[in-house]
Image (cartoon, rainbow, N blue to C red; front, side):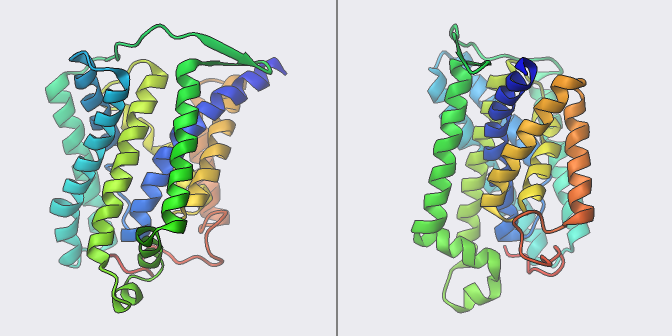
Length: 299
């Protein structure tokens, strides 16, 4: 029982990071119908941006903000100057996947050339521990959980109570109809990529703060479980991504506690394959959900 509760505690921390990453990933897909497979490497680039600021002696919260801003900037630039031109030329899904993979390789190798093939760590203050019901958390992990909860509440408020959120939902549902109703879908998409990029950067810095050390492939290694969480909830469904992250975060940590830590990725792959076979639209996707070729990609 102690092992189970401890692993559930670790799972809640993983789920918090995963929720931020998965919601950002699914927001991008929802408004553009594009699988941004460079997402994990943008997470890593953002973590390095925070690391540079941390190395300069800035407080930790400044590093977190810097990472989020870096993720937003890189995501927006990649969409505006790389993905959007290909979409406007009518590039099909497979071509866009190849483009995204190429961007991922470019970012990863640029980080490798700039920082080297070694592990890096933030300079962090001494951290104390807090125990609750056989679950032990560091104060930093509790902060990560708190930030994730705040972000999820903020995303909920954005989507439900603001004109931008309603425009994003309309664009995600039917871009052509949204344009016909006077919504500037191009501006909505650009803003969505900024927000999603900020979530990507935030997830990147949260990930490396939790793992203590990172390298140029850390974010890419986290991409599979991020996609699995998004698919589990229903890709393009922000609320589904939140639930999928909680389920997958806890399940992978419990599986790792009773087997090996390297089995986390195996569990994520099994969940991803099972969802694709049994319910491709995910748990919260529309019945008989549309495939990626049935929706219109927007720039």
